Image (cartoon, rainbow, N blue to C red):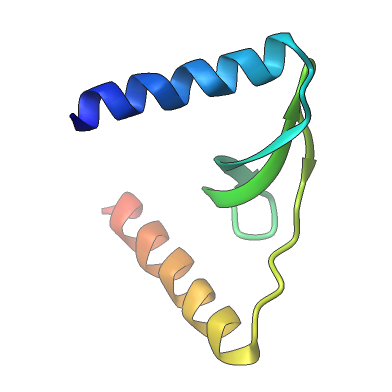
Length: 78
């Protein structure tokens, strides 16, 4: 079932690009400040990512997010 769900999600993303629907999707986006691709909500349209949305995080959530980025970065550098 997971495989079918993934295919459905891919189809939705492709349709959103082809039809320039400008819908919000969770996507891997390159974050220059962290030098990493990380999951962020983004508006998707005909040209690809139209706009990466900022995350409205509390101070604690922001700290946890930064710690996650650091852990992923360290793992990838191994």
